[in-house]
Image (cartoon, rainbow, N blue to C red; front, top):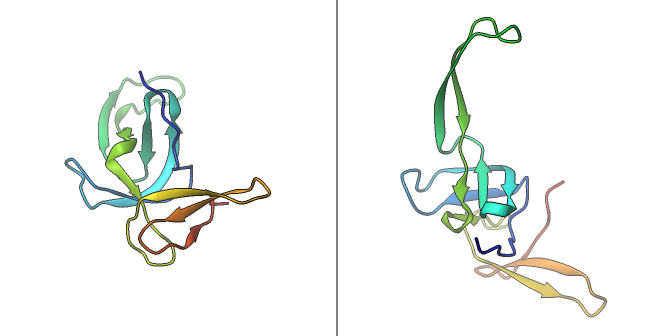
Length: 111
């Protein structure tokens, strides 16, 4: 598995650009760095049948988000509202910031 550096962090707004959920937008809930995947809120929903337990006496069908490969999502520029590639800019003092390629505006980290 090739680990790549990711420019997407938890809390970012992203748009899915490939696959069955193309053009869906959502917030990143988790970044799975080991497998280069992200979990996006409301995207790639999967159903799982759960047996009744003491903690969950009802059991039933649980719906949750499944991971999407990080190459299939693109960060949404908060200034323009469009999906854009991200470039890193390093200031002379060593501070790194994310720059949206389409608009040239800095993209702040969420939170």
